[in-house]
Amino acid sequence: MREGEPLIDWAWIGSHLDDIAFRTVQHVALAGIAVAVGFSIAFALSLWAVRDPRIRPPLTAVAGGLYTIPGLALFAALIPFTGLSVLTVEIPLVLYTQQILVRNIIAGFDAVPHDVLEAADGMGYAPWERLARVELPLAIPLIVTGIRLAAVTTIGLVMIATLLGDAFGGLGLFIKEGIQTFFATKVYVGAVLSVVLAILADVLLVRVERRLTPWATARAQRGDDQLRSGATARA
Image (cartoon, rainbow, N blue to C red; front, side, top):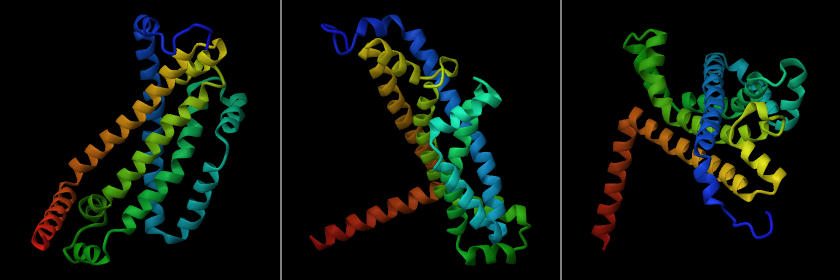
């Protein structure tokens, strides 16, 4: 921070709202694409692993191994092949989502009671019907939890991409530029907005989960009411 400069220059923020909005949209787009593509791949692989248990150990091992690769190293390794393009950002981000998503999707399907599956088979459901009408609805809570973790993680990882070049955009550019020019306001804008995005993504996905699983919300509410009733009776 320059000597005599305020910690946050509100005048600068007010005069750069368009730039802030543009980079925020860039950040959301980069993270959103990665989570959407990552979920599509992870869901297909997880469903395969659930149907064929032999696939599960190698799948989880590979997904876990990819997650251990340092982000900056993976971004840099792709530049000779994909250049400073969106692919250079999206490929690592998609790979990093696999560990989180695969683990939670498989856990979601594993949590479906076997007697429920047997009842669905006894009712004559075709495999795709059982998946759509029984397995998937019951697995949603853990699946959405995985998406929440992946979204928050990805929003943070997008910040790393800006260290490789300005072409990628996103809120990380503010932090990079702020450090380079000793302008604290840019650093705070980038950092605070990235945290806000992560919180908003988490809150939004929690609401989506509640909309998709109204029975779970009702059951939790009944449990809370029973606990309160029991406490009142003991008092």
